[in-house]
Image 1 (spheres, rainbow, N blue to C red):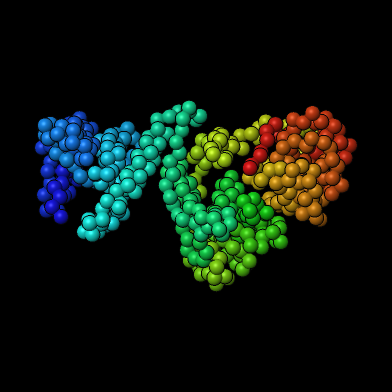
Image 2: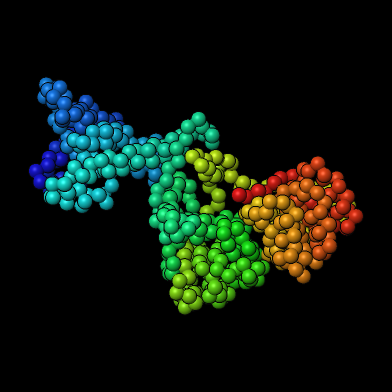
Length: 475
């Protein structure tokens, strides 16, 4: 189309090898590439050629007097800081040219995404390039902000700086938002290795916002355990969590924990799904997500239900983010991640005359992990022997309501079981209810002004109680 191409470094070499004529950058800048390539494009000639306003006669005259050649298009991909995370991969010249071109978009086309190359070529052929320029400039500024936020985070040690930007890369468009009339998309933070970034659909339904947040809630629950762990999620909170000697045993227990709520639920496991595990899944499950699914297990799951979503997400990494973000109207709050639960066990203390047995203490610790990923207020009942929930009361506005729901949920399994509360009991009513149902031991935060009354009631009723000294809210 008659364009002359100014190029640098490896790009220039590639174009020349492809038989494409280029103008070396130093011919324009009058300076060699210097300082191991740190200085190539940054120059008065290059930036001036991009920035001057072609509709301004004074600019036109100055450009002519200064020997500035107009540059009509900037095509640029930045150094791959996202993959490298090193000082030498902080691009300076590229962003400078892109910013200049995007500012002067009425006269200069800026292209930062190879996916736009064909679109731009076609618009040139059809003489319609002007209709694209503003959108391409906006895309360029989004990339600049994204890129700079990656660099800023890499260099920043303060978790709560005065100003902050959060990078996000679109991973997928979602089927819809919380409701079918709402649109939604999933964006990932590239500097945090998240399983959701590797979420891959193999069969069935596409994900809605609720589906993907349910999968996220499931991953948050099962990642706390090295043992085979399975969870059934409904509306972002578990209705059954369990451990097992095998992943099939863990899943069977998680479903049995609340078969009614499991209907239409989402299953998430922390180990690969084999055929034995797949055969535990019923046709009433909406989505199943696992690190990996064996081929025969996948074929079996496909036969259960055409619309069942089957997804894998690879190995679950340890928690790598130092913080969590909660979105509010018009902004967000940032907090430290609650990720050192195992270390907190050393601070637990027995506060009742009745001491928990070794088995009870083991179940208490498992139950505390379970409760830490269930929507607050949370009170759960953990089986006396099996590492699984028997009853879950969550999301209630009073702790005794959660206690009533958990106890009603577990029925006959309450006798000898463990009751776990994610915060303190402000009154002794929950302890009385627990004892009436046969609960043998309780673990709670402690810290209420009524602690002594709660302890006295537990002593009177022969219930062992531990204080964690730490809350486990999850909202």
